[in-house]
Image (cartoon, rainbow over all chains, first blue to last red; front, side, top):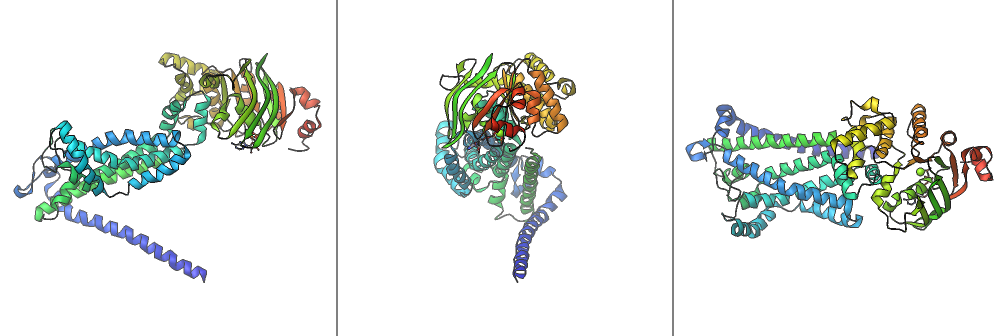
Length: 283
Length: 250
Ligand SMILES: Nc1ncnc2c1ncn2[C@@H]1O[C@H](COP(=O)(O)OP(=O)(O)OP(=O)(O)O)[C@@H](O)[C@H]1O
Ligand SMILES: [Mg+2]
């Protein structure tokens, strides 16, 4: 009897799991079906060899947005990686266990705050500050980098922290027994030992930064030109899709889907890289 | 000459008394073995000698530990330098997940030696002293984790020699090794005695009898008997020591 019931539960869980994967598969298929014709008809040249995006003239150069996406991601990493890793080191090695047990779930909770909230704070508080200190429109690469840098902190901190906490005690003991200070132990043994985990965290954070849409729409200004400095406004690939998809038709629509394919491939590569690195880790 | 001396040493984990009134003289350039059944406090005592117990919460230590006549708990002590001088080899070989070379030079670097040539010289000397140089000189950049257990343990000893340790505290250094590897490490330990003072914890009584000059027998946190190894093993004074050695318990 019990056995029968268990079988039903098992089967239904299987169906749920399977359908989730199936839906994801359908979405992927859909994106490729919509975007691939554009790439097949035009090659990648029409997307990549032009700095001009003006769908009404039939120009679909994604270079400005590509530069926007990459520069903001880079900026976010410059801010987020040192801060995040430093925070993970503090929590793993220097804070008391009680403090860690309080802070760790709180940091993980930060990842759950809707991105529109981050975008809103960036727009209302950060952008005016940037405008008055650095000039420019305020809604800029710099502003978006700071907002995204903060948004990727939870990812980087929690994955780096897990990597540090998973290290065997014997590494630390061996180092301390040689007379190393706690800080020397961290930089000389623990960080190198946890480097693959930390790198995986960084890559996942990077994926998050590239994929983020709502917050960047709110703080970048969304202008479609190649930015000339970090206080210029810009537009990202994701923002471009979100902003224009609502009214795009025909070739324009196809071009946006083609952009989505490029993003998709990029994110997949980053994730595979992260997984490879995590798997390769030896203890 | 006495290198390490403990006077009325007590150690508590919280309210549990793990060591009780230990008075011990470790002689310079001799091998001193601690034997006794599991949980009798051998590791705890060993870790008192280089203050590794400082990292365990709730530990309280009473009494004195003197190294070269200097008390190391009550005086203001440079712990970095103390641990450099009193090196420790752990039960499970614990090379860092770095290259062989980086493992050896980690200690010297920590203590401020940064010159490449010096570091290479130090590496050569340290690895030669543990008879690893010839095997490994062309593999210095390989991961230390790829070495065999015996090689790893030798490397861990070499790490200590590289910082000019004076005392080597070894906590069951062979317990994860096979008999042949064990024999080789024992040979190394006897060789190292010429230059270093060695304290070794052993579960294996034959091993203690083979390698050590002095032996302390521990039981439930007390040092029941301490003396020349041949005395302890041939004519123990205490009945409990005799029972342990003849295998009546433990
Ligand atoms: N960190 C600790 N906290 C509380 N009690 C401890 C701690 N470490 C050891 N003990 C206790 O102290 C006693 C002595 O432990 P110790 O590890 O020194 O014994 P040992 O002789 O080295 O044993 P073994 O041969 O198993 O290694 C044991 O009863 C052990 O349970
Ligand atoms: Mg022990």
